[in-house]
Every structure is written in structure tokens, then in C-alpha cells.
Image 1 (tube, rainbow, N blue to C red):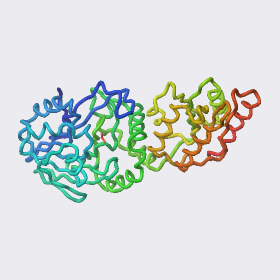
Image 2 (image 1 turned 45 degrees about the vertical axis):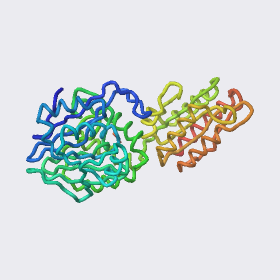
Image 3 (image 1 turned 90 degrees about the vertical axis):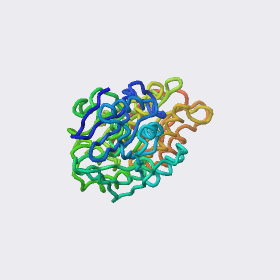
Image 4 (image 1 turned 135 degrees about the vertical axis):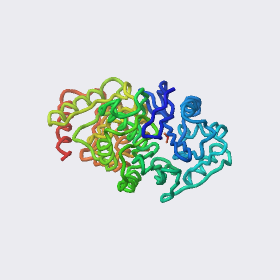
Amino acid sequence: MNKIEIKPGVYWVGGIDWDLRNFHGYLTQRGSTYNSYLIIDEKIVLVDTVKHYLFDEMLSRIKEIIDPAKIDYIISNHVEMDHSGGLPKIVKVAPKAKILTSPHGQKGLKNHFKEDWNFQVVKTGDSLNIGKRTLQFFLMPMVHWPDSMATYIPEDKLLLPNDAFGQHIASAGRFDDEIGWDILKEEAGKYYANIVLPYGEQVKKALSALGSLKIDMIGPSHGVVWRSFLPKILGEYTKWVDNQTENKALIVYDSMWGSTEKIAYKLSEGLEEKGVPVVMRNLKTNHISDVMTDLLTSRFILIGSPTLNTGILPTMGGFLTYIKGLKPRSRIGFAFGSYGWACCAVKEIESVMKTLGWDIPIEGKSIQHIPGEEDLNQIKEVGKKLAEKGG
Ligand code: FEO
């Protein structure tokens, strides 16, 4: 179990979850890590822990550096159990450690573990001198839980913001430049789209509060440590928090007998003819968490389902429920589908788009049974007209 020194005296001592494929519904095809950091100074500090089943892995890394009984402080930046799961065991091997957490953190940890540990509540502006270093704390409510906070070490120019800037990726490398920007951009985008997206305004506030800090390294609680691609990831976050999109289209659909799929591909022809690149995502073959990665940067979102029993297909129901929660804003929407005798799916899809505040410049289109040549020609024209609304 290798410990990794990310700054002199600051070690990564987390756990690597190579087998993780489902993180509460999010497809984690590359696994993940839970990152804990150990700071060696006059006082010894552990920042966050790991999921309960990786506790021994974290402990063995700590033991390579110090006797865990010497830990003076444990900082819990976030209550969610992928980071707090190791707390009940670490407090047993580090009995003198005080747990520093936010006000909501203390409440949440008590609710989770029913233990009255040795807590010290911290807020924005509070700091902790540990010798050569003075740790600073910044509350980041709803990035992405009420308790979320960041720990900043000015002497190391190191920010430990927990879930913010995370990526679900298990790897032997601990640093961004050991993985490469293309993969990280995709995984950090997928993470943002599936976890952080509803809280863009809160992330924006946090970015602004942290903006004056000197930072040359960010150690999130999942994935790799950012040191070489800091300006790039900060640039992407700046776009994501504002729902800035690119001139491209995402067509999400499911089909029963192929009619909705025919419409989907005809719409794509129209859009592409007008210079708008299109990504096709069939919900039978694509996981909704991957569809969200495409949705994050797409300006046009076209959603199609046939009508089933006066409603929509269950796959589409799941997807619409998911996006209602994730609340992507500032998109151009178009609903389409097919029906046998009751024409309802398109209305249901449009209703979700309206809830999300999307612009719907062209009324949804529903075709009875199977689209004929004339129908498909008209559909292609709709795709072309839609492309012109992206300006
Ligand atoms: Fe990585 Fe919100 O837990």
C-alpha cells in the first residue's frame, strides 16, 4: 500500500475502489477513489476518511508514515459515508483525535453514527494552527450537501475541497498529469453533471470565495489531485456553473417498434445539415449518467418516446425524473415521439422541459404509428429550423 507525498509533509492515504461500478445510480465504469490526506506537522491531522470497506487500506497507508494513535485532529469536510465511513474505526485507533467539522457536519455525523465524539465545530474564517501551518476552513453549503466544507493550507497553496473538482476514476496515478486531460475532462464533467449540477449557484459562490486564495494544487475527495491542469479544470467549472453550452445537439430517445427512432435520426439529419453536431443516445443502450455527460455541454436537447399506456416508456420516465432533479438550465428543447391511439408522450416530455425553464421554440411533434416519407421530410425540416434557433 503506497503512501504518496503530494506536498512535503502532506500525504495521500486514501483508498482505491477498483471494483466500484455503481455509485448510488451513477455508472462508475472506471471505479473511484476516496481520498484522505495526512498532514505531518507539530500536530498530526487526517483530512477525511474512506468508505467503510476500505478502512484497512487507509490505515495501512497511515501506518507507513506514523502511529495512528498520534493523530491530533480529524477534519471531516463532508458527512456522506464515502468519506465518513472510516470514522467509527479511526476514532478507536486515534483516541485523542478531535473531529473538526462544520455545524451541519456535526449534526449529520451524530445522525449517522449516533456517537458523541470529541467534536469541534468550525465555520468560514476559523483556522487551526498545527505548527508550521495554519489550516483555514471555508463552509461550502450545498456543494453538494449542507455540511460540505473545504480545508485550505496556505503554506502549501493546497485546497482540499472534498467532492468539488472530483472525478470517479480508480488509477495507479494520483496526479492529473499521470492520467491526461481528455479522460479527466470527461470524468470531471460526468461527476459535475451527475452530482454537482443542481448546485451551480452555490458552486459559483464558493469559487468566488476561494478566488482570492493562492492555490497551486487541489486535492478533491475522489480521483486524482489537480496540479498540472488547474487552469483547465477551473475554466471548465466556470462554464458549467453558468450552464454555458456549445452549439451541439443531444438526441435522447427510446423506441418500441422503431418509429420514434426513425424520427430521431431524421431530426439529426436536419440539424447536421445546418452544421450542428449531434450525439444520439438510445436509452436502451446508454446509461442515464453517461447521457448527462453529453447533456452538460449540449445546447439543443431533443427527447423522444413513444406513447405507452397514455404515458411514456419506463426508461424515459427514469431519465426525465433524473433530469428534473439535476436541473440543467438554459437549454433549447424539442419533444418528439410516436403513438397508436392516445397521443400523450410528447406532452409529458414537454412538461418536464417547461419545468426546467428550457426554451421550446418549436412545438413537439408526434406521429401516429409509423412515419411515412412525407412525415420524415417534415421532421428533417424541423431539425433544420431548430438548428437556426441556437444563435
Ligand atoms: Fe463523495 Fe458527497 O460524497
